[in-house]
Image (cartoon, rainbow, N blue to C red):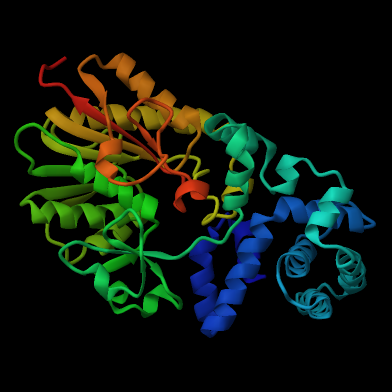
Length: 431
């Protein structure tokens, strides 16, 4: 209830609030896991649950008190998405509204959830004639954007994958940790990752010491592609232009140090810049951390050998890990984000020297944020061409992106976030 209130009232992020709440309540590992499942599931499947709750309620959900609705969603997830016994789910939900000063709603909560418990989720959705957005609990506009990107044949598989709890993946930071010391199964594509076997990442010594970090395998592959891209001539100065919160920078700094190169990390927001500095603390290969606007970085033009732009985006490729994002984002967000992405990619091209490489990435498969941004840049810059990034990722199968030579990763195909990667090379001849 604390986490749901923070997400609803403060636009907080679930994955940031959960650890704080778990620590404050001193939950053991088992209760922490249950809390995480209840929160994430209630938010992730909110669209489907609200449809069922509305069918079982005598009043419109828009007229239900927000705290009471939080309790109903938690109860619905226990009834329809977990093995919690119905009597326990209903009783706990009633106790919750009473504990939150909403005793007058206890009978209403009891009655609604008893009706909900009469069927499983699929039976409810069948009876209510749920459409694809409702059945898979995604806003309709998100479903349409994903349909444009992945096609009709794989759409439902992608939507279903978005609703699965993500595995916790760790990354060993080169020069500071070895993958063998991390507990878990090695990731199939990144040579630095493992899927955590169980327990809290904070209990892993290498993570606690900052020598490893929690990082989706897709994000690891972005950093690896940026480091593996061929460049002509010297290879000494690297830039991560949108570095926060620092996971990719930490991988890049380690890889740069192994080659005698150095990394400059740029992050516009001060609090995220501090996270980057923390992630890079103790790393070799760090030239500096700058709190600056990546569209106008205080860096010399044409002075860097390789640049990474992991641009701010809708985040629709990470809906497994950011359950609130699907409900928080709006179609009009693209009107702000796409121009920003184009400015950042243009700035990256200005920073890289002739013969150098720019890796553009987004945690979104939306075509306006991926292919269209890259195409617009290529049209404006005759001194830049698109190179093939697929060869840099080894054995990753079935990852062709929307433009020839680009890569699109998918949760349902690769078990990663839906990261897009494009490699741009600045020609030796200047504009």
